[in-house]
Length: 392
Length: 210
Image (cartoon, rainbow over all chains, first blue to last red; front, top):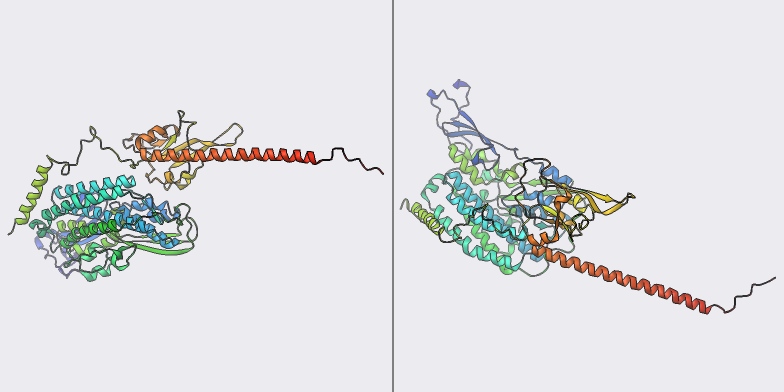
């Protein structure tokens, strides 16, 4: 029987070697299906893993359980009616999804957002980056087995930010707030002042406490350092973007590369990792949150008065001239792009989403092979996927 | 020192535990069914129809123009206009259905409505046992008075009321101006007629004879 099994002693793609299969186990590998309803898979994601003892030899991601026909729906909807659907892609950071889509349509139709709108978009976009990273840190720690303490501290702060966003946009997660050339409503000075008080007060305290609680914790270091290593070469070849790429030491942030919107006016740094392991990916999020707070405070300081909506832009009944456009922004998970082809009708001829979660997930096997099953769970957690975006 | 990070972490959890007895900054939960958080004004869940006055049928602001039906992304609105006895379409809905189980609360109908007749509610305890019919809301269930809108979202309701009053005033002014113009035109016509009358020769022209 053992003769028919693959030789698992060959060099594995990431350089690791698997343990030699002992004869008394008859060389049998254990095939398990992790998910789609497993709490550690962050949604309805399934991994078909082959285990040698506790070591993963192959791992095949299976997705599509949450497929909702997003792209085809986008071709039958009007341009405006697509905005609420983009909320449902990455539902932890809906505002950046709105922004990316609106950015692509603005490119297609030739609208230029007003100054005030650009500043408010930066504030809201960075706020949703913070919300996403707060969630990620909490859930990653939950995957590591800290039974809920860091997660609930994180969700407590997320609730406060969601309360603020609910006051502004009316919804807690599905904001539907951006419009072509502007925002749905203006943002009041009172709301901005409260956001500022919060970020400088309770949120700053949360970041310091979370750092003290986790960053130097020996158990966390032992579990995360050296696991799920992603080599920079593979990351670039596979098209990984976002904090996962920067943790491998590749300096690529679309906010700096494309300088879309008004990001060149702000003074912020892009944190870079060194080893590309789970710990670096965790640290990227902790550091990016602090940078995002810095950007928000700068944007609030420079926020100009004026109209929030471009009077020439119209959202309802938009019929852009025939053409195509690709708009991309740095969403919390990486490069989120929307590709649109217009044929002059009220709905796009082709509507394509370039989801960061999906593309970042393609290297999961390379990161997990040769490691224990428990490490695969935290590797998946540190990639930061949302299944709404993976399956669309 | 190995373990110092863990001890530091215990200090944080202890601080949070003790703090939760003294400050709401550390303890943010409330006892839900007994205590309810106050929803912000902008909070939205599902749309409803506003009516003025006392009659939920005649007072509806909706004129069955079906713009919201066309704009609705998941197409959960269904409208049929009322017809009078001659079969002419009237400016009010006979059927106005919204399927709450399909609605995603995006608020695009509210933005599209030119008559401020559809607004967002903030109800959230609407669970039903029937999966299909139970959440299909009909006109009678959707119609809610303007006072209710004031109750859930005073900011927007006051703004809408002021705007509608302003529009009404302008329309009335316009109507008055139009009426005045009409009266003036009529007077002018009468005057012109009088002038023409006056300009006419006093004696009728004698028909020419051959």
